Length: 455
Image (cartoon, rainbow, N blue to C red; front, side, top):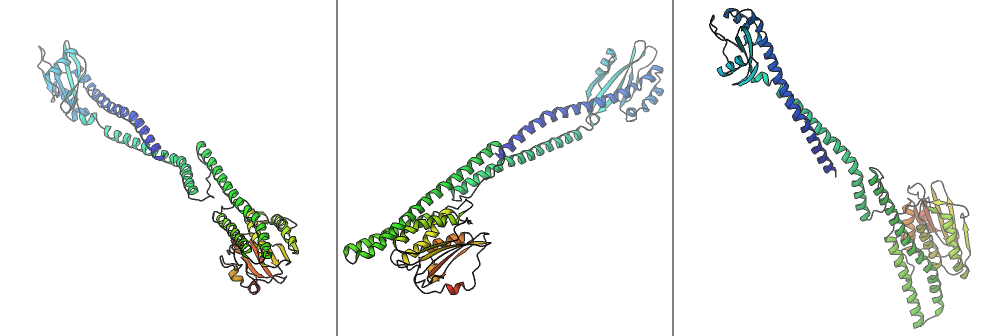
């Protein structure tokens, strides 16, 4: 489009320049010719007073010599013979004898083309029936003097106009094309998976409308993918609780082929749920929302898990979730992380083990603590590494990896240590300013607590 605009501007400007410069150049040439011939007319007219007074050759030669053209030997004078006087010829004529005779007979001034220029023939009466002819030679150099310079100036002006029009067209074209280029680039990036790309709504009205439509489409794509991921996560969370109940109930089935098959089926179902979670995380969509209320999410998930806690006679305590606590994490991500931490409590501690969820708000971070009164964590360092959980059959090591990724997405971290209840403590540090969260002194010592493994 840009080069098309430049070509159009070049063609239009060139036509305009030609339409004006060519006629103007011809007018300049005619003006130069008229100027030279007019000057010749003045030179010829300067001889007329002398012819009116005398026909003496000597006096006429003196009169001719006083003129500019005469000094340059460009004036010729011919007075025809009369019964009382001989013919008088002064100077070398350039016009033919026939042209001189015709001018003398007609009595009218004439300009004839001769070798090397033009000859101005001016008849002048010097007596009764006698007409002298004054010839002024105008060389081609005088006729075209200044024409070449004027044409060069016109050509320079025309070229300048063409270059200027091309520059203006290029500038205007770039302003028009730049939004289109940005839109095309953004479309390519969106096709490559960059869901955060957006286009500034700038440029002509049509391109602004296209940019607005593109941004709306990108937002819709993000929302659809986020809804799909949230649906997968929600389904997996809904399956977690009945799976946990089934797994706990299989422990009371005793031994035997049927019991082993039931436990194997439950383990297989747990692995399938873990695979769904993996797929949802691998298709993670960058969060575009401002965050969520951590306190609201904790209250909701604790209400979800409280039914199972009541069935297993677990004492539950929640602190700090009675007032809003905003965190820079998408709601679905925080739900997945919190369910992973609470699922560890039910999976790796005996029935009747108490646990607590605490929320602490600092100036630069929000800390979520899930602690229990169970046996603790045997190897905290291995527990936070993906795939190193030792939770037994069905363990994928994915649970705490989910928690760690959520923390690190804000610039925070996740730690496993010893809780005040005597068991394990999982600390989720969500940084509010995007800076990496500091590691508290003595935290590593708490992380060396012996006990069980989490996933």
